Amino acid sequence: MQRLANKRIIVGITGGIAAYKSAELVRRLQDHGADVRVVMTAAAQSFITPLTLQALSGKPVHLDLLDTEAEAAMGHIELARWGDAIVIAPASADFIARFAHGHGNDLLTTLCLAARCPIAVAPAMNQAMWASPANLENIETLRSRKIPLFGPAAGSQACGDVGLGRMLEAEEIAQCTADLFENNILTGKRVVITAGPTREAIDPVRFISNHSSGKMGYSLAEAARDAGAAVTLISGPVNLDCPDRVDRVSVSSAQEMLDAALNVLPADIFIATAAVADYRPDKQANQKMKKKGDGGPLTLTLIENPDIVATVAKQEPKPYVVGFAAETQSVLEYARGKIERKNLDMIVANDVSQAGIGFNSDENAVTAIWPDQEQVLERASKQQIASQLVELIAQKLAAEG
Ligand code: PMT
Image (tube, rainbow, N blue to C red; front, top):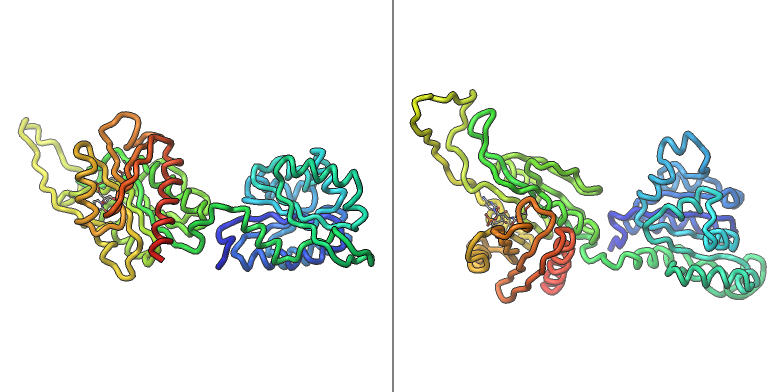
């Protein structure tokens, strides 16, 4: 299994003989699905060339804080934001000292200061250096900051000594890196999510729609991505940017949303958050309709739209299908009816009559319903609700085997 699918890892290489193992580490991380970028200190370049790492990572290697050309391509702050984790391997005694004391005197230490992602350190040095009081004090500082330490291992060293200080093997470091992402509950899964409203055209300038902002569906897309899934978001017209590392298919009408959904299947999980218009005008006028001006009514005939989630639930292989039910009364009862009628595995009941939750709000409060069980998710941000739902879906999917 690719334990690092969808993850961006920055490998920091410092000056030590174990730097040769970093080339292998880049490969192993890629084998586990990671997108890898490499940062090298000046000392590292005495042990292994940037060209080798560039060829292996397929990306320019980042070397210098003060290189205007490199900074223009991807500056150190941007790089710090890019990474989901930074792994320093090998981490020399000098780097560990500078990192522990918050120095920012080269690209790698500056990156570590700017990063908000986990930073892990794989020490590599001579056993006597490792055991020196200064180094052990620095290591203690890192431990007190909850910096994950990968190793070191004990064994024979390049200098002929035997003892603690060897860098872990590349595969061990890759596995430890994957362990940093506790929330890898959907790794290897393909998730399709519908979000936002649909627009059903009356004429070239008018349409029937609703108040869905897309926030709930987009939060679910982010939560599923963070859980390691490959996510496709089929979105009606909304004012939200496409989340990083999510594939978005933009649609307008219910029919377009259905076509897009069938086009991206098969998937492991299908989540229908979209507020799909149940009806559309039977005809769309080619030109803007003119006011009659006689004070009389205008009659539109509406015909039923296809039911997207119910259609998806009939496909083979059937994904784990999750619907949402936006209701203003008898919320749980209506939601339970929909789980059966639409052949869903789970439905999320959303009371949209309450102020501050549901349509176009930043918060929500829902009840997750399965044929044999229910669970209330108390009011929280849509991001928090989304993470909880993703966890519940992953648990059910795992239980189904
Ligand atoms: O987008 P936000 O502003 O963040 O608001 C979030 C939300 C309120 C839209 C969301 O939480 C929600 O409740 N979505 C479901 C809205 C809805 O249309 O519910 P429904 O009860 O009408 O439909 C039931 C299910 O069938 C839904 O999963 C819906 O996507 C699906 N459906 C409905 C009609 C149709 N033609 N095709 C469908 O797939």
